[in-house]
Image 1 (cartoon, rainbow over the protein chains, first blue to last red):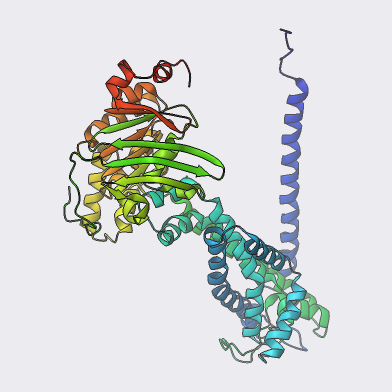
Image 2: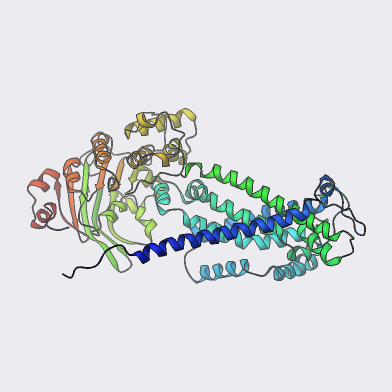
Length: 291
Length: 267
């Protein structure tokens, strides 16, 4: 037998080290970019941020307006849309992962879900305008916006739920069925708890996307706010922070449009930050048994 | 043992360990698509004994075992012909939930749920609506004691099951299976992922457990079959080559193929 040269190769070691450095550099670059963006937003927005900004009504022509109703509407709309889209999205995801038999119909359904989740939001916006605002005659309102946002969320949640459930090891299922569990018991007591961290991440992604969504809401929730506060009415107009940001910059009638925009952006970033911290804590609780 | 837990009303007069085989397969054939995994296996499994099923990889011994609580149905649509009985009843006609409560299973890889030790063992009784704190506590302790794990975990029942060692996890899975008070325990190479000490503990367990249960164990390990079982069945390429008392199979096998296999000439 020919004696092979099996000494460790220097080139392999160099590649290994080079790859490590390269990945570190990419990660560091990404973190740096993130910090620059966050820093720029907060730096510009900070001087504007005070209790007055958060608690005052917006102005239409004068400087010094606040974003109280927009902040309220943003959170209210996200909550409403999630309330509608979570049961439907998770339900559809459970169906796709556990009940649907692989076949043409299921394949077609999956294609639809994927296409829908990749649909440009401006297309959904026009759909919402035609269906909710015009056909149902709901005008520019919280309910139109919430339904349109739910349309945006449902496919994401469906997909995430299906993937999280499929990610639960087969052994967990066997263990559960092996003890005499029914399908529903297995889903509720084993699969969903095991998939909970994934579901949570998906929900946060959906909530974050809904919170930052502007195009869909410009055409469904509108660019006005209610005169009363807090207005829980579903029929009230529902301008959100993201829409407000777009509106003040593009409308340009406010003398302090730049400051208002910077402040609004900072508020959005801070809300998302808080949201993510809360979710981190929740996630840690959920994973306490899965080390 | 907490007798107060009635997990499920008795469906039919329960047969006592008697003359009759607890489990019986008659000309059992199982095929996944065109691939026939079991080609007509007939075997009686007597009550309160440990029956070992041995054979080389891919001989169908795992599939054979899984047929007895129909957990093989999870691995895709299988075509099953022939007859499988539990206490004389056609097992294919039973409700899975009832069957699997009575015929428990321990898998190759320890598979505790990502829950606390307590919740793992209480999982089964809870499925059947057992809610009372003292009933659950009793069932958990009983299961863990029978699986010889109680003393090691009694002070940390609320800890995650995933923090246990592999051998402890496997005994936890045994405790979990015992907590629904099954009549038969199927074990699919339960020690293949364990070290020799953990393996020995589980083999010791079998001696105690067979007083109350009928045990069927699939194993790759000849010594394990010889040490721990009362009867041995040798499967090869989906067919039963030979079965009988373990001592006979290992000292005086009837077929040359059996002898070749147990002496390590192939397999």
